[in-house]
Length: 199
Image 1 (cartoon, rainbow, N blue to C red):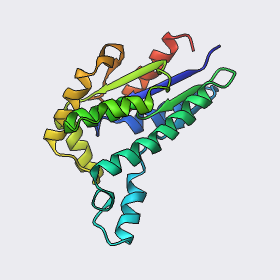
Image 2: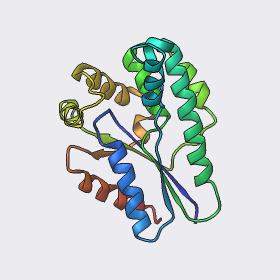
Image 3: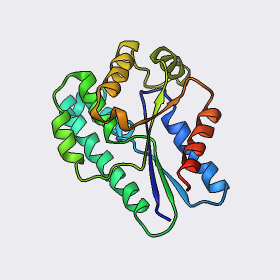
């Protein structure tokens, strides 16, 4: 049976990482070969290195555009790793907590004009078998970020990202899951979606 590549996207605070980790854990617990791939851009270690070099953060050190380019390269490597693992023979499920669309959304929300370059960079990556958008009200997402206590985005930014997702040409190919609910119920829906695919 073919492998499945699952990508979970959504605004910050939608629960992407929590859902992706728990989905992989549940699949593993049920005896399936599943693996969670964190698709982080490397910002925390770059911020640490920047502070060691006397800068406020990575953006101050590298500049916003160069930092975005570095993050895109890091994410590209991670997405290729995940899609390569998913392409190996045998039944398996690769779960990622972000995908290329997250970068397109960031460019649209910033109105920076860098989306075309990001699309060129990622054009050889496969389309996920299941592309899930975690739909959460921006105000709810911000409350979650405040509770988490780090990387708290402004409400206006979260609203801009939410609108950017819905404006993408890929929007109609996404499976929208209500993420205003507790994480375990969100993961229940993700498991059901995979079961419906006959995996």
